[in-house]
Each structure stands twice: as C-alpha cells, then as structure tokens.
Length: 153
Image (cartoon, rainbow, N blue to C red; front, side, top):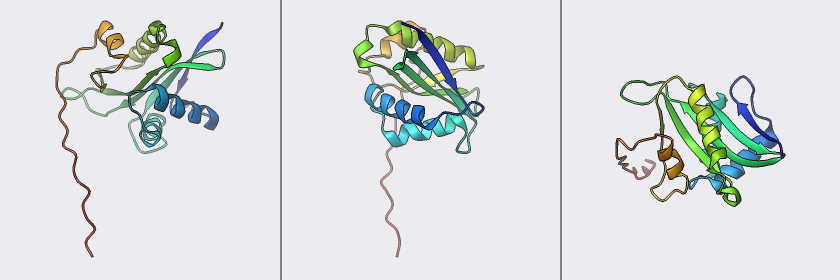
C-alpha cells in the first residue's frame, strides 16, 4: 500500500478533520496524552497561539494514520534545546513497524536546526526507538506540581 508523510506548519495549516484525527490518534497511541494538551501543542506548532512555531508530521498508509509527531520550537538555545518533541505516537496495531516512527523522527531532525528534547515515561513502548536513534538521557526531570490557588474574596 502507498505510504506518505504529511507536514503541517504555520504556512500549510491543518484541515479541521485531519486535526481531530491527529488529536484522537495521539491520545490513543501517544504517551498519556490528553486532548487539551495535544490541541495546545498543535496550536503552538501551527502558531494559531502566540509561539515560536514548530511542525506536525504524520505518516499515512492510504487513509490510515500510522505514526505522528508534534514538535514545538522553544525559542531557547544553549542551556535548553531549540526544539521539544512534545508528542509522538505509533499505532498500537502496527507497533512492529517501528521503522515508520523512525522515518518521522529522521524527518523531524532534518526540519530542525538545533537540539531536540522529548519527555517520555520510563515504560513508554517507543522509548527504545529514540534511544536506538541516538537520543540520550543526560538529565533527570523533576517537577513540582503547584496546588491551585484559592480565589480571594
């Protein structure tokens, strides 16, 4: 079957139907993604929200979405990578086809002109793909989850 890679950015835009398909796909096949978080990352990549931009890559076989990436430009360099690979997903029925995801990662590397970081959970099934492609774990991320502040009367 015929495979294709689609690139979406601030210049090309993203048709609403394909946008919803990508959001659903990344929520179902991504790493604990929520619709709100995926939507926001896509909005930043396409610059529909004020941002430095980025891009979305999607691999299709015919009309079936096989893999997708959302990459945001951070506006930083040196102490922080220029790009953040926010979401990555490989269709769970096709997880034996990691080459499809590798193709998208290589394309993302070609589209960037700086370092790329990503956050994955330690048990993510696609972690091995990124490590095999040369991504390293130079830092441990620690997060403090701030409690919502009560509104003052």
